[in-house]
Length: 328
Length: 249
Image 1: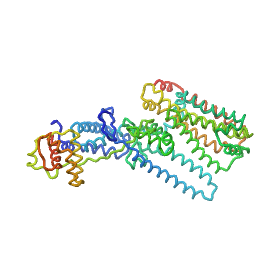
Image 2: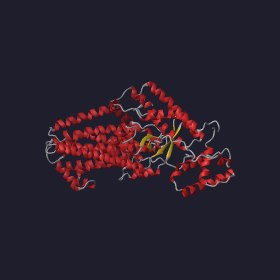
Image 3: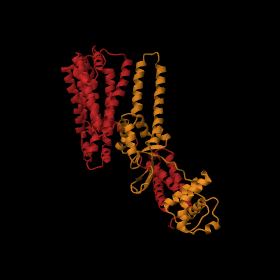
Image 4: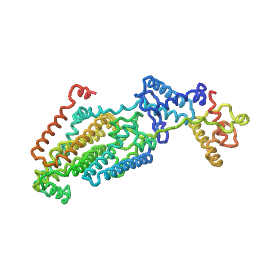
């Protein structure tokens, strides 16, 4: 015990360095922007500080000193092991390679999400066309008739102001739905399953009812272009939710939390990608879909967008680096 | 977690085998931070709405204004935290004011992907209303993590800005007569030393009778152990502290 110096002597000898670390952590921005000599000095100071912390603990110095050293060491540790700074390049990578790769890696979840969404959608749409009262199982009659009324006239364009208002509505509403679809996947995937099926059913009921009322051409022409992006984004957001839920169930030898955490990079990529797709969809839905552009052009655009999107998801980011990533 | 103390702190060990202790942020403190952020988000939205209203009033932009505002609403709802927590190393304005920070469980700063996931899973924490599920999960977790934190592997800690305090001095300084009644060397366990220190730091703020009452909780066992008698329990503990911290000098 007697090999430890007295606390006061220890503080007097070392506190200048501690204050230097404090100063470097609190003032003057991230470490990587400093001159190299200062970075090297910081590493040394940090190691000394850690040594002092261990020393102070084992020497039984008073708790306020240990708490102080704990705090400074914690912040210095944070400064030293800083998260990589955000670069615009990361966003370019996300769109060009990371998103399609993540989707291909997790394709089974996105395939299941597509089934859970499009299955009920098609089933209810067909059932409603055959017998319009089927739609009332999902949505109230009044709402269905209001929707049908909306599509009774040929699309003739709106004022630009009204278009912008709808763009805001679609961004807020649709991306919100997709994000909720993803978030509730954390409840062992149940939330994602619920929202996928529920949204599939209500869209199916609406489209089916409008077709049964004889305005099928109008609603399908309206939906076709933005639907390519909107519906696929909803599916991949739900797929990411399923992936998150499944990782809690089948952990592959990890703890449940460890298993979910291993998915974080893919989850983040997928959900941000879905948000980008939904923003594109909202723009189209507000400005392109309701315009008076002739139906054949809209259908051609829809077909073109669908093929481009498919080609992008299947082909973008392929190559040796993807295989290297997959092996990791 | 064998020797984990019964308080809201958590210990992490770095690759250098250094252990730090972090103070965890509980629901109350995080709730306050959330409310501050809510007010800021509301204010941003309100100011923008007023500005747009006055600039667009009378023009044909009124519907467009609605559209812009809805987009702002969306951005403040879903990306406010993502923006600030990634720019400010895990701190939103509310967290900053409350001295909170989001970090990874290993003590590392949270990465952009972590922040995206923890803030989008917010949608599940909010269910069925008012963060009920998030609070429930938080109260069952030993690190006060909500679903978003669990998924992203993050936790919210209180940043301590403890200053280097002046060393504790015994006032008035021990007299040789007082010291003569005690053994020359006293060894206290770390827990005992800490308890005495915390007591001595509070001494000035306590009523003398209460002070004596508190000191009486610890003094008799120490006196018995050392085989000595004392007159004032508080003074006795101060002397013990003085002797115990004289080591090595």
